[in-house]
Image 1: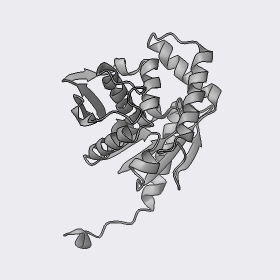
Image 2: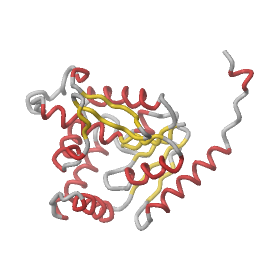
Image 3: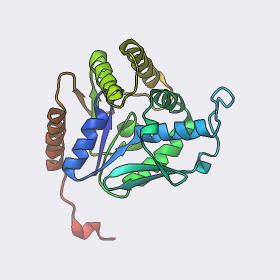
Image 4: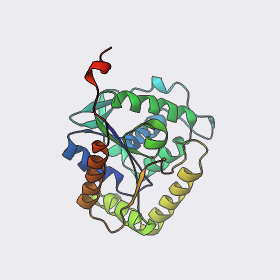
Length: 232
């Protein structure tokens, strides 16, 4: 079972999907962290988009490992687990830039499908339902107004001790929205058949409960597997 959740920055995807996965007993796949890990590793390796506009080569040579462990994605660089270093605003901005490169998207799409093959997951990102898992049974597009999304992201940064002012953050999110929606490769948009849910004014558990109800409704419509015909 793949539950594919897309949406813009600050829509609440990470918080909601992490909690949803825990309550369902699924693994949580944070694909945004995968892009941030690539951005972080490329910066350490000295990659410059200005010098290599077509994108980095030999991404498989980066000492990165993605693994589902204890129901969540863990990312390792040279054997060291990456965590908070991926959450800084400058890494997020760089991840937005490199996410527009075909080589990066192809590399991570392969990884994401590999991780999903290991069991049921809640996958969140920006092209989960449109590109990576177009056959997912559950497709959701979470969104919220710009003010709500900026306030959520600001609270997240402040909680981690990262200093950034509201106006700067709002401008960054607006810029990210435009880049995601207008890029030629895998633009951000609801997938055909996706449930669009505006989370402005909604509490976290309220959003989770709404998604759980959608999952239960969809599950009722799935025909049972014919065990005799399923044997190969």
